Picture (cartoon, rainbow, N blue to C red):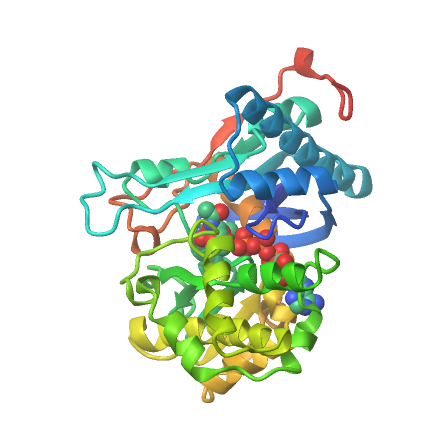
Length: 401
Ligand SMILES: Nc1ncnc2c1ncn2[C@@H]1O[C@H](COP(=O)(O)OP(=O)(O)OP(=O)(O)O)[C@@H](O)[C@H]1O
Ligand SMILES: CC(=O)N[C@H]1[C@@H]2OC[C@@H](O2)[C@@H](O)[C@@H]1O[C@H](C)C(=O)O
C-alpha cells in the first residue's frame, strides 16, 4: 500500500502557568479529523527567570510601554525559536512549526452582549514571523484571532484535536486539561468508520493550578512554585464552607461557551481567598487543601451542571494531572467515572497541548477549519492561524541580536 504523504511538524506552547515552553515533534498525515499522528519526541525549555517574571508581571497587569512590549514579544519569540531549534537539532529538520506563543492577556466576550460589538481579545506574545526567520521554517502563529473575529471566545482551541486523537468508538470521554487554567472537551462516542463527527462541547472550567501555584509561592517566599504531587495539600483538610463560598463566584454558574484566564483566577482572586481563610485562622496546608478542593469541585460541578450526562471516563492532561491530591479529590466528586490520563489512551499527558498546536498548524496548511463553534461560540468555522514563510535574507541566527 502507498504510504500517505506526511509532514514533520513542531508544536510549541507556553501556557498560563508561564513555566516554560513545551515542544513536540510529530509526523502528521491524513486530512481533517482522519489523521495519523506519530510523536517523535518532545522537550520543555524553561524560561530564563527574568523573562518568566516579566511575562507573569505583564500578564498580571504591570504597565508596559509599547517599545518594551515589542522587546518582550521578540524575547519570547527568540525563546520559542530556541525551543524549536533544540528539537530540530535532536530530531532532525521539520516542514512546519505551529507556535501558540505566550498568553499575556485574555478578555472573554462580554457576557450577555452581542458578540459583534464586544469581540473577545486575546494576546499571545512570541511573534511567528520572527520564529520563521530565526528557524528558517514556515511557522503558524496567532491561532486565536480568526475564531475571535468570528465572534468566538478564541478558547479553548484544543477540543477539535482531542476529537481527532482521543475519541472512543463506544465510550463518552471528557478530556480535562489542568494547566494554570482548566478546560474540558466532552467527546461523545464516535463509532467506526468515523463519518459525521459528533457534537463536541467544551469550556474553561476555571482555575487549574494557578491559585495553588500562587499560594505556594507566597507561603514559601518564592522558594517553591507549585505543590509537588499535591503533597502539601495532602497534609491539610479542606474547609467546606470556604470552598462553597468561593464556588459561588458567577463564573462557575455562567453557561458555556465560556473562557477565562489569570485575569480572573490570578493574584487578586487569591488575595481574596487568603483574606477569607484568615477569618478561620487556617494553616497553609489547609488553605492549599481548600484551593485544591476548589479546582476539583469546579471541574466536577461543571460536568454535573452543563453536561447532558456524566462521561464514562475522564482523561486528564497538563501538569495538574500529577497532583495526587487534586486527582483524588476529583475522583471523590465523580465516584462513578474512571479517571486516568490521556497517556493511557496513547497521547502523552504532558505533551498533548503542544501536540495540539502541531495539528492546528497542519490543519492551517490544509485550510481545514480548526475551531469548533460549539465550543468557542463562534458564529462559523474558521481556518486558524497566520502562516509565516521564512525569507532567506532574514536568516539572522538564533541567539544573535
Ligand atoms: N508533579 C507535579 N505535582 C503537582 N503539580 C504539578 C506537577 N507538575 C506540574 N504541576 C503543575 O502543573 C503546572 C504546569 O502545568 P501545564 O504546563 O500543563 O500548564 P500550562 O500549560 O502553563 O497552563 P494552561 O493549560 O492553562 O495554558 C505547574 O505550574 C504546576 O502547578
Ligand atoms: C487564552 C489562553 O491562552 N487560554 C488557554 C488557558 O489555558 C487553559 C485554558 O485557558 C484554555 O482555554 C487555553 O489553552 C488551551 C491550549 C486551549 O486553547 O485549548
